[in-house]
Length: 213
Ligand SMILES: Nc1ncnc2c1ncn2[C@@H]1O[C@H](COP(=O)(O)OP(=O)(O)OP(=O)(O)O)[C@@H](O)[C@H]1O
Image 1 (tube, protein in one colour):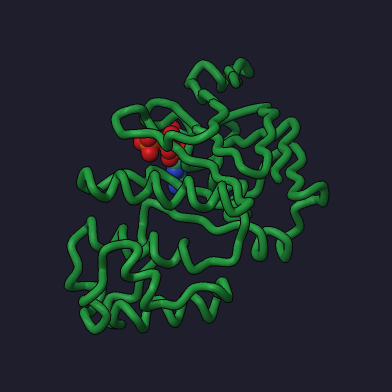
Image 2: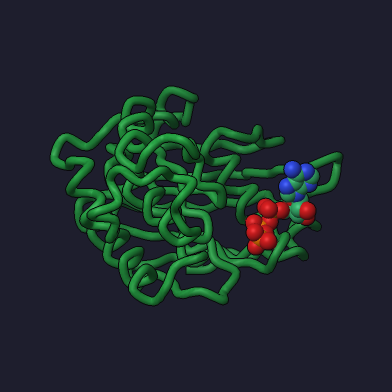
């Protein structure tokens, strides 16, 4: 699904990560681990095409990841929910599905039930708690037609049931032929699925990242 070769990123001439080489197959999750500041978010933002790498190649299903292909193939769940505060829960999902597309087999109402937000359809997103906002972002991911999920700390702000929800969603997505990258600094759970491990490490900045799995 995803193949990365020699991927390197620096800020103000200071290396953040890389060069990194890794691959994620269909049906697999890649767990990206590292301490605060190790570069996990930066890596996901580079893969999503939101930041430009200094060097390296990213291929999706064997094709160079040009912007249009990234837009079709990747769904990014970031730290910030990217919601419109004055739109309702349903309106937010309609807006996001308009921008990013929608899986034919899913409805907005169904996705809200999946993430435990049934009954909140008309609530404004600014009225939601942090965990409920995360659940709304997860509903957006659930509706996305993209096969590769980039999930930045998906467990943050979630209660135990929410952690189980993320695990169920990742498992279902992989079973349906998807793949996923999940960052964690280790304080949260990890999906109990077939998982590769990529450890980003501040020592990686001198060119020695550890890749396992
Ligand atoms: N917008 C920015 N401008 C300048 N430096 C940044 C910016 N965002 C991140 N950094 C720096 O880049 C490095 C990697 O940050 P990144 O957010 O990728 O780490 P992380 O592994 O996701 O951390 P955390 O676990 O705290 O979320 C850090 O040293 C951080 O200070």
